[in-house]
Length: 151
Image (cartoon, rainbow, N blue to C red):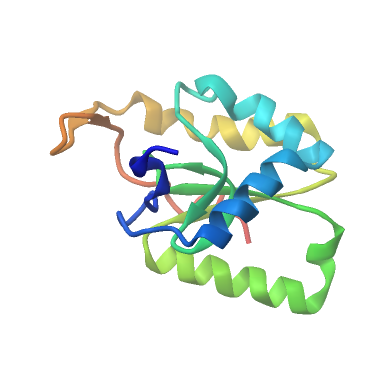
């Protein structure tokens, strides 16, 4: 694997090999719901935005990540109904938030129309003028507002 892909997306730090292996394993064993959401996000289908699946971000593996928006999208199954898991999810969301990363959550049983509607809220960001990043790459406007943010 090329060196750039071993670097953490958000801070340029190295990703632990066990996290890389976990992310690879999760990509191979995606749930039906994760596959549904991935079909809406892959190949820049969501407003031309690049999403990665099962991405290591700040030491956590998130279901989907858009670096341009600093947005993690999580698809939560029944295990997330457990109070201990819910507490961990909340703590993880807070820790990611401290790094400027927003988390948008969907339950496994969220209807496709609802998912499309919430993803459509990203459209105004896509319409903002692009600004040149120091590396010469184009970036989009500011990160998502808290409106529509998952819990």
